[in-house]
Length: 251
Image (cartoon, rainbow, N blue to C red; front, top):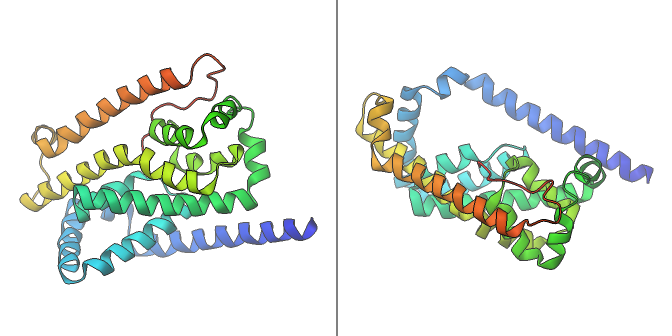
């Protein structure tokens, strides 16, 4: 037992150390103002477009590995899906994003199941106890709906199924199916932003931006997805203790 605690302590320290090094290296090269500036985004868009033409496979591999590391570092999903659309376009970007996010989340779930199980149970078991009865009825269907509805921060959503002892294959394939609709919408938005940046030397104002179909169609799609999620939640989480049932997630 003491040996297990030492291993968990070592891994926790190692994780914090790697995360600290990653953040230090990143912010020693870039500032928040720099990476959010229009010139920075446009210049890197041109570089990524060139790299994609030269070696698409390498770019996909690098993006895949970066996404897995990002998820393991407890990063949230929105930057990944927007970037995937920005680089690869709507359909290819959606496939790459959903697969890489799912692999990262599954690895995180596997890690959490071994080393964070007691912590997760202490923190969340009471709040989400009502979901246990749902998952026993049909684990795979439950998990697809759990991913689709969301309402829980992406980082916590990835490790919370430890409470329900979800099978690894159900976690993996349920994540792909459940997350794909919202990932496709956000990836499409990222793809739309890339087209706008390609066509404009300066960032357009909000009104000019919002009337472009590459922007307003994904937003409309997201609103529709929220409404569908609300209906699914109402029909799936009925009566027997809705406490802890999730609501629509923002990746």
